[in-house]
Amino acid sequence: MCSVGGPLDIDLPADRVETKAYRCKDCGEQFKGIGKRPMCPSCQSEDVVEI
Image 1 (cartoon, helix red, strand yellow):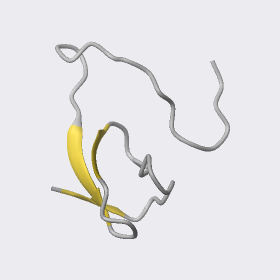
Image 2 (tube, rainbow, N blue to C red):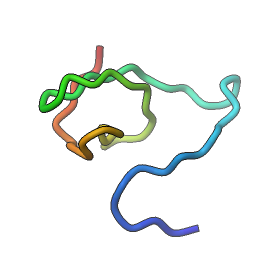
Image 3 (cartoon, rainbow, N blue to C red):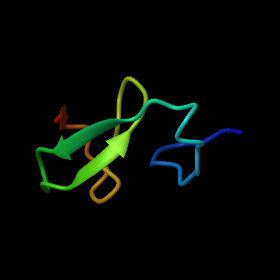
Image 4 (cartoon, rainbow, N blue to C red):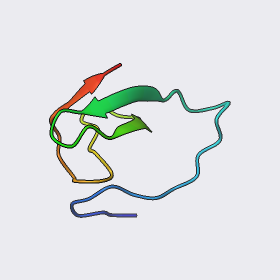
């Protein structure tokens, strides 16, 4: 599967995938994400901090 730009909406088993909580510095949205470069699901900004 290939994705170009933007987040994917995939349900992953919680017991197999470690997610981290993030807050977007641009819009303030809080979300859980995975990977080295999480992206805000609301505004697609990569300017996020782990909380």
